[in-house]
Length: 207
Image 1 (tube, rainbow, N blue to C red):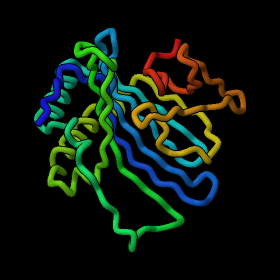
Image 2 (cartoon, rainbow, N blue to C red):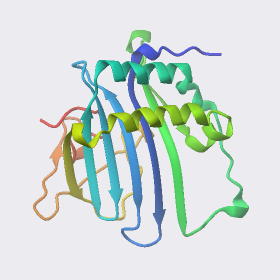
Image 3 (cartoon, rainbow, N blue to C red):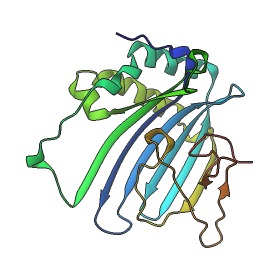
Image 4 (cartoon, helix red, strand yellow):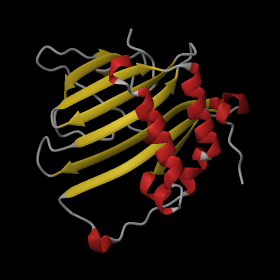
């Protein structure tokens, strides 16, 4: 069995979403812990509901960042990508869909080849494999960080109401946010249009 180097974590993300047939019915909730190049670690929460996107950011203490790293290592979080979830087609809803996913990114530059290793997993597969307590432990840490009194910033932008609720770098897609009603976005050097504090493709902060 492969051993992962959890001292090289770059990001951890947990998300859930639902989407329906009606325009503006999409909802999603995403939290990601980001280890930035300058040593700062932040928690970024993105909530999309209908036509509104809200992005909140919290700065983390080194102690809390280390707790998250240790929790990921203890649960061997990067191995969750091997777990599979098979949905029973008899109970599949055709007009509403939902998902609960996650990702962990490891900085693999010291190994050569690709600079980052991305592992995506299905939270339902994690729970069905008997690792639900490990997942809950990570979620509880995220909630402890997101103290309303310690929030650094909150930004709200409009969406077109029809975009996929999970559109981020972890799943290999890019979130494109047009400017609307005077709310201006920004374009990162990598070419990605953004509205929040960080680039959704490469993670660079807004200039």
